[in-house]
Length: 330
Ligand code: TXA
Ligand code: MG
Image (cartoon, rainbow, N blue to C red; front, top):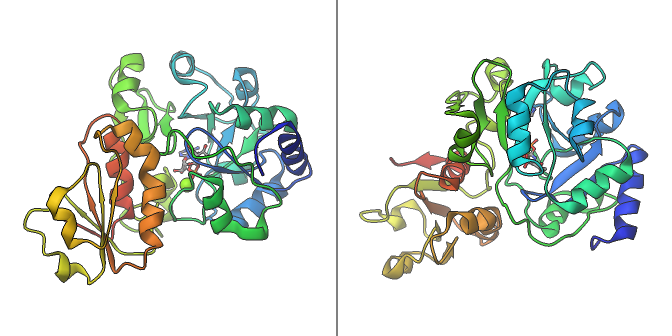
């Protein structure tokens, strides 16, 4: 349903009454429920098929509401909030007791963010409550960047999906933990490590990638770091270069995901997705998940993805490609 005053009011009603809605943010579409309604949160976990050890981000419309969710808001949080909110940054901070354990998967911390998309903030305001929302995809799958993607994931299971067109960001929020003495990036995302560094100094990037997704203890740290996640159904082979790659050996029908036009090397593939003709990483991030979905729907035997430059948003793009991949070649 197109975003307007009436559809936002209806979606807010659904949230107030304990239901789940699909809604746009600047990063990806979310599956939103009242963060303080434990039954609604449980329903959302079930809908997504999400493991209970994976905490959910709580979305607030402003700083005042954030303070009702977190028990402490240190100076570093303040500086990051001033610099990047509303926007694609999630801060992990000590939670207030009123935040249900189900939302935080039993952790003492909660991930909070103020989204930049006006429809998201209006939904939260009108619902009169903070909104717990994971990306609106079945657990482990590619995140949705259009309302059509959400519909493809959940069909008639959602009473309403607010449609504001394609997301401008395309990769999810950067998750930063401020629980320790230094900020730690738990998930690379829309705010780059370089941008973070300009505000709080060098941040550590968590290299903790649980080898086994069933290893709940380690996965609890931030399941966005699970090794295989954001994954298409088609096997994805991640490479550094196309030169010397024996494409037919990988599969008869191969598709290619690249940043820029691969020139004559495109001939080895039945389907090619270029993320940005100009090689712009911001544009590439916005196109990433839709391109992955198109390739996944093209009845391919294999998707070959070419790594993008490892700086700025390229780090988040490579991170997602790596988690989507079944095989990597350094
Ligand atoms: O851009 C986004 O963040 C989107 C939109 C809808 O806001 N949401 C999103 O949610 O990507 P989800 O559930 O797909 O990913 C949330 C990530 C997971 O990796 C989760 O483990 C991490 O945030 N997270 C949430 N709360 C946490 C906490 N207390 N400690 C550590 N990681 C946390
Ligand atoms: Mg997700």
